[in-house]
Length: 482
Length: 100
Image 1: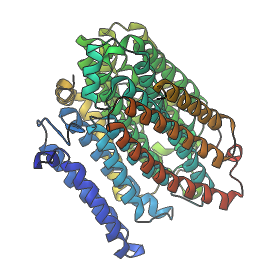
Image 2: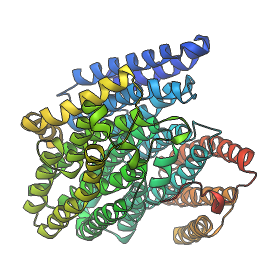
Image 3: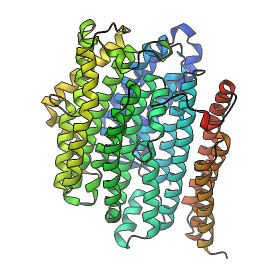
Image 4: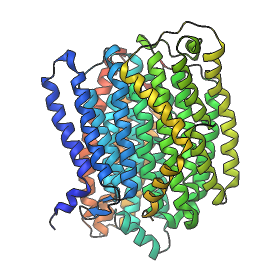
């Protein structure tokens, strides 16, 4: 039992980022208080370098550490997406945490640690690693949510996120315990082997259901979504932007990996449950969003609704002929959601004032007259969230619905289309307020914020014109998953 | 030897007590303790299974769970203390500054 360089090769990006985060934690001590921009730059540097390494691993397939972690197309794809999310998170935070007076170096280090957890999640091939990664990504996020202390909202957000996050972890651990009891191993490959030779036991089904509940909390699926609006509203906006994309990507990556590879044998039991979860999440998320007057809460419910759309990708996972396509569609939708979401939160950050002012939808009145570019960008993001052309959101929904219909779940696709129609009402309300009401909004001009938001708007439109390359990459990524 | 089912039933009971504690109690500390109970119920189940299966994998997993739970305690207690300093209460029903 010795480790070879190959083992380390599997985890190179992960190790690189972890070591860099540890070094940065120390380096930060020597960076003067008013120069924390250096920490931001160094953390971005670490993320970019790791991204380079990850991209250089495209095409390699290996397992390491005695089958505990795996490097494949899927993990490379998800890791690249996560690292880009980390970079965007740093870019959005840079100016925001300075002007809200919470500029402390730990912010960036915590963000890096959270990204390492998410990356490990994508590479996990053993339920022990799934658990470790889940905690590694969550614990820094609990701290980040409460980062604006002593602001009450932020503290409350941190505590709520912590209590419900830890609660969900309890479900995951107990689920893993039962799966371990049934399959006699925590290794995903061994669980597949067990499930294919013997008939599925009740223990395995309950264990899988508990794991689903735990991850349901993490990705904010109804009925495990109660914490989402409060946490997203109370946490500093830059944290929310990162959390809503990053934690969702990692949660869905783990679900895809665990369910699609290890539990296909219990698909008969799970498909109906997943169907119900997806439908409920889409309906509830979109309906409650209609009543919101605060942009952060609106986007929080929108994020819940989108968890429902992505959950659709799981429903046909027991059907071998469509599951590769539907998982690829899920991955594509995750990219679409992350890009659009970061852009929308970027606009929110631009308009936010100190003490949580400037967050009502009414505060967006007159934006198109004073800042036409920003209003146009927000319009693009809203259209993308609805799923209207010419945006990446439309393409993502198209692939998703196509896969679900191919799997024979036309009813679910109809629910998806109808709830998208409902969502048009509240997303377009933001656009109407921006273009047709008069007001005197003021925005914060920050270079990185402006660049990020603009870049996301461009990506949202451009990728929708040539989506085949991204979808081809996503399809290739899931090819070896099964 | 005590059959493994007994341990599993005990752990299921402990887990349910933990879940009930989270759902029904209003004090953040008590909720937190209930969560720890859930984790320990899982630990018990894992240890019982791994002793019955004569596998070391589970024993190792339990160490990971214990270590991570300790890390979680550090962050959780810090958050609770921080909330207490500003609100003079850790009743979760009073965490209501956000509505909608």
